[in-house]
Length: 187
Image (cartoon, rainbow, N blue to C red; front, side, top):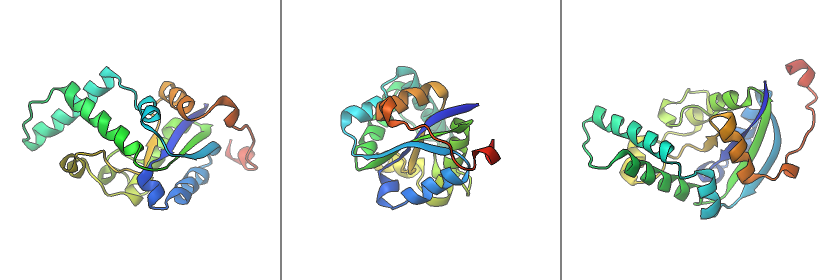
């Protein structure tokens, strides 16, 4: 199924000059870049990207509490409080420098891109993924330093999210329709 998804090269990916390597992985997979721009996000756009969704924040908080329990860490924070803190870290991270916003198109683009970028925590990502190959941060370090995990990229998690996120960064006229020369061989 042909679909579009959003990929953001976050500030750490830009500062480390990994934009070209990330684009190469996308194009080498057979997916097509149909929109791309470099942006210096402000707080308002970061909050549109990472919306303050109570369900999402509680989910993040519950996952964090589960990890804390496994490690024997005690906290009095509620799942919602943890989620709000993580949300704050993410918006701070996204506004800390330039990002490259990319719309990627292709068969099953959302799941393919998520496989290419790897697990959210770089130390758990497959070695051949973007995060597995170029990042070594962990939740432990991020928690200790009270910041988001530096994992180079963001990838939309599902079709509904991809549509919403693409509209945050791009107007419809900025997304280009074209055929790659190798599309007949790929599809």
